[in-house]
Length: 232
Image (cartoon, rainbow, N blue to C red; front, side):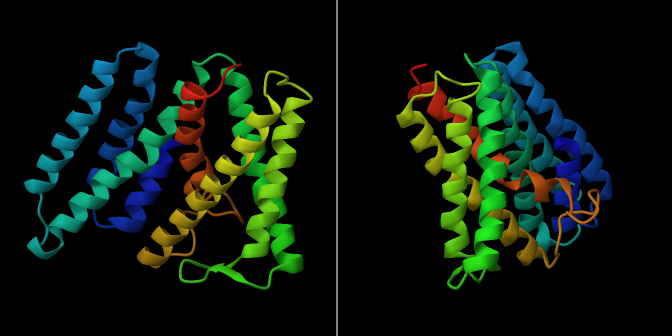
């Protein structure tokens, strides 16, 4: 998923950089597996090497000087946006109740998306952020948060009893809002690049990034919540 997501990002942002696309897809996806080593120094080293390595690559493969800085920025953003954020799913899996937390993320994102869509379609009157996503409404966003609450309480009363009432409410609202922001951020990128979908790999639904946009933002926030606040 990471490799495909990076490839989609490059096709939107750097369509003429086909050689760099495949190199980035492979190198960036390796980053996700480093948490399995439980070596923080290796992780920092990998991020640093990716930054320096691709900076040098674009330094010596300049197309036009006017677009050079923009291309470098896009290339480095691809690593931070996709594999670095996805890596937090691995880190989350390694925590106590890691499997349960991964399921909670999926429940929050799915219930949020579904209820936001139906609430917005039925009651949406006020645009949420028309510059970035003209169709999304405030009513839909609020409905999505209600759906997220339903998702966390479903988790609490079925497979995750260790989730307190406070945890269920806070994670539903925070992760729900962050997930919506992730969706808006990807819409911002697509509109900036002049494309409707990030890809065509999923017929009728667009690309991998179109499906992962909320999870990309939700993963690190959930991990740091578990790391610093969750008591179990």
